[in-house]
Length: 206
Image (cartoon, rainbow, N blue to C red; front, top):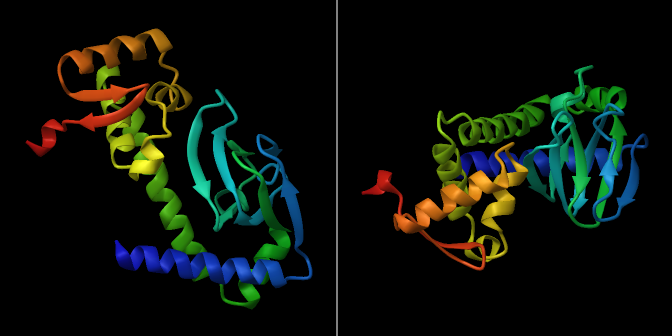
């Protein structure tokens, strides 16, 4: 895990610096909640500052949240089908380059191995996303999301509404989420305070 993290950090920094230095890139600033058309425009970006969320075009479901520094657009730079769009969760600063010049840049500076490391990381994120939503039961889906919340750093977990987190990532109704959460509370599987998860008893650990 440490090696993967080190590889990812090196990859992001190396590609990011190359994009910033390129004469074909430009620096753009986006406001909180602003939609970014980088993917639809076939561009690659280096998120220098801020946090963005990736949403499905169909259904508007939240797929993943990314914090700077990170490279965005690699998954769709050579794909004509655009399945996601980006939205700023905070004010953002992004150095952007179009995909053709990004390809030239990667070829010239031998950056494809770094791009591979970043794509490997993204594939892991999408696999984890699939695990959250492919459980055969609604209760199982909700428990998988709770597991995801539980492993967050404490400060982040205390800012995360369990209901909102689950609703943004699924088409499960709020009433069904409320019903299943109350069931888990009664069973003693979870403890919550003001909508935040404060304890979770994972049966897999017992």
